[in-house]
Image (tube, rainbow, N blue to C red; front, side):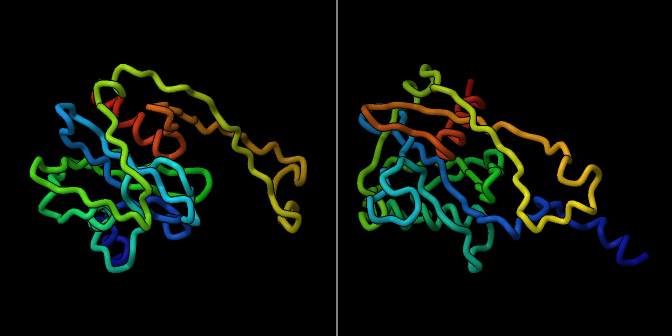
Amino acid sequence: MEKIRALRNREAKILGHEDFFESAVTVPIMEYQGEICIILEERTSWLKKNPGEISFPGGRIERGDGSALDAAIRETCEELGLTRQDLEYIGPLDILLTPFNVLVYPFVCLVRKNAVIKPNFSECRSLLYVPLAYLMETEPITSAVAVKLVPPDDYPYELIPRGRDYPWREGSYAQFFYVWQGHVIWGLTARILQHFLSLLK
């Protein structure tokens, strides 16, 4: 009974999170050329994951990180050449859980006016300063991808009702696309961006 009572102090996590690739990103915002802008990165072409795509600063949560927020700030500082003092933490956005075993913890941060950004060109080809006003007035192009369970050949069908004829549920995964000066913002980045913008509207 004591072990059961001890659950009172337990903080809930996402079930199965240890089987997911867990990453954290920031949505960095700063005043640039007289406009409030969101900073995005164009990833270098030689990166293994999502080369050439547009993304928020961030990356994998490492063992040494005290929290997802610590990971997001660490990665942002590494990629933008900033210090922690250059960032003002605002708050978390909703956790993004994907159907392909990726968890993303997004956080909103302000980049202080006196901060000097020095991009890490080993990861970042260029930076995009996208005006928040443009994003607020621009509706994204939307689509959806079907998500379907496909059991492996050795699945124990004999243990479930109707066996191989079991009516597996199908889902739908929303997709968003923003276009700015010829750059396409899509995928997880656009999903987080759309969520952030929806909170401001």
